Amino acid sequence: MKKSVLAVSALAVAAGYAYAQNAGPNDAQIAAIVVAANQVDVDAGKLAQTRASSNDVKDFARLMVTDHTGVNKAATELVTKLKVKPEENPTSTSLKKAGDETLKRLQALKGSAFDKAYVDNEVTYHQTVLDAVDKTLIPSAKNAELKALLVKVRPAFVAHLEHAKHLQASLKK
Image (cartoon, rainbow, N blue to C red; front, side):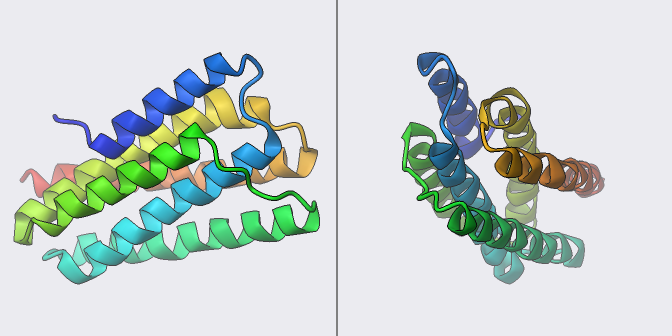
């Protein structure tokens, strides 16, 4: 299966960034990464709500928009409370760029081809985000509340990944 531009870019940048920084991103950079990662999935979900042909895919997209908007709201409230300004960094910038490229690729598709490409992207994307959360973001977070937020939202990413995998299998039938 061909991985999406988004997932490959995000994983490569997140891993490379963590190694380049030795200690990984700081809390302000983590905040920017979290917001960017969630916004990318919100944008893809909004597109899927209008483009998907399968009701199951539309329902999944609606869930992605709702859940990822909620995570962004919680993250924004937390960084505001902590007086931390999200700091753009190579990972957040790469996520945004790759997200735009993925949207462009998906916009060219229709029907079942769109459904398959969107769901394949969601599987790869959520696995990539989980890897980044586990290997870079949680270990690098210094603020206890930020770390707790990442730990708290992690199960939702796991559930999204499993849901996307289930959809992916059903679309192959």
